[in-house]
Image (cartoon, rainbow, N blue to C red; front, side, top):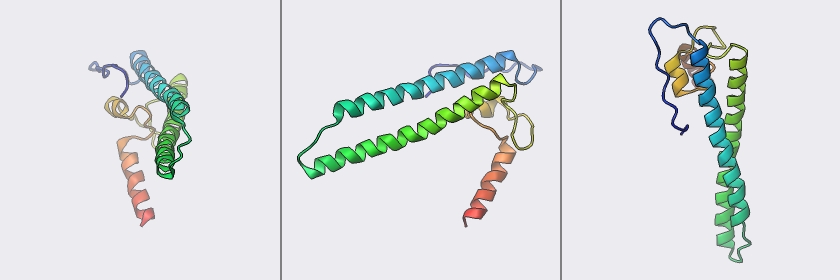
Length: 136
């Protein structure tokens, strides 16, 4: 996924969200955003290059279906880019890495797994339980 950025190696006793950690997550988020933006560019060029007016309706339908799937994927990635931008903004304002709900540290390992996380694992679990019960 994200270009070869090694996971952050915590040092015993270091302060949470110190400059080294912020720098690491900033690099991670920027690399992820670059990859997603490159995918968007590739999709645009692919669709321009591959767009054809097939005389056979089945071929046309197949192409439209493929393009539709690609566009849905890019839309999800666009939303992810927005979350990455929000995370970068939080880094700039020293708010990154803290739960939006309860204010505690989200944790380095959780942020490594999901750099755009905004909730600690406990609040996220409660949130998912609420969603599950509301959906039934």
